[in-house]
Image 1 (cartoon, rainbow, N blue to C red):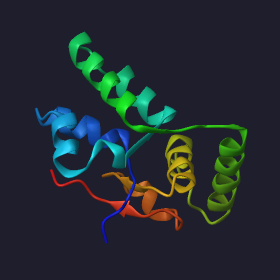
Image 2 (cartoon, rainbow, N blue to C red):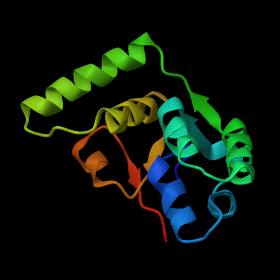
Image 3 (cartoon, rainbow, N blue to C red):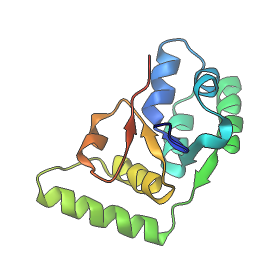
Length: 131
C-alpha cells in the first residue's frame, strides 16, 4: 500500500547528507512534493545542523514546498498524554519523537524514519529509507 502522505523524520535528511547524497533529490525521486509532510520539530532539527548557507537555503526552500503539520496547544496536549501513557508502560521516548509522531497521526501521514523509537507508538505507520 502506497502512503498518501509521508512525514520525513529529521534523521532521514541527516543520513542522506552524511552519505554525501542530496536529500531533496532522493526524496523527490520517491515521492511527489505534495505527498511530503513536515513539522516544526523536524524543520528545526534539520536546519540547525546545516553548516553550509547554500545547503541550508536549499533545504529551507524544500521545507516550504512540503505540507506543514502545525503544532497547536492540542498537539502538545496529545504529545504529553501519549508520553505519559508510554512512560507507564516503561517506554520512555524522546519528546521530539513523540511530537513528530503526534503530528504524523494528525496529518494521517506515515513516518519515513530510521529511528526505532517510533516502533513503540502503535498509532503510527512506519516506512524505512532505502539508503
